[in-house]
Image: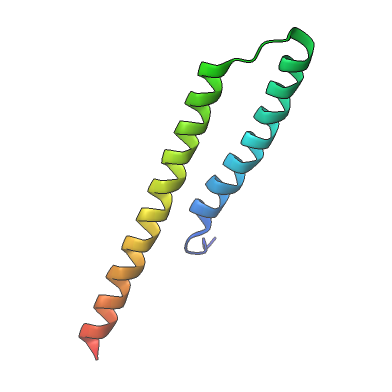
Length: 75
């Protein structure tokens, strides 16, 4: 079974976006029912996902730059 290039990062980003959507809905529900919001938890979750997304983007651009430089050397 062949795996398409870049598919793993796309799956991770998609799962992360779905998780953030569900997390936001849960936090809104908790805020509505209890009258308080878990500020520290919200900050940590969004910080982690922001760093993960940024690192994924950096890895992808680094691979693209390396691929471009290798293709220019072959010419």
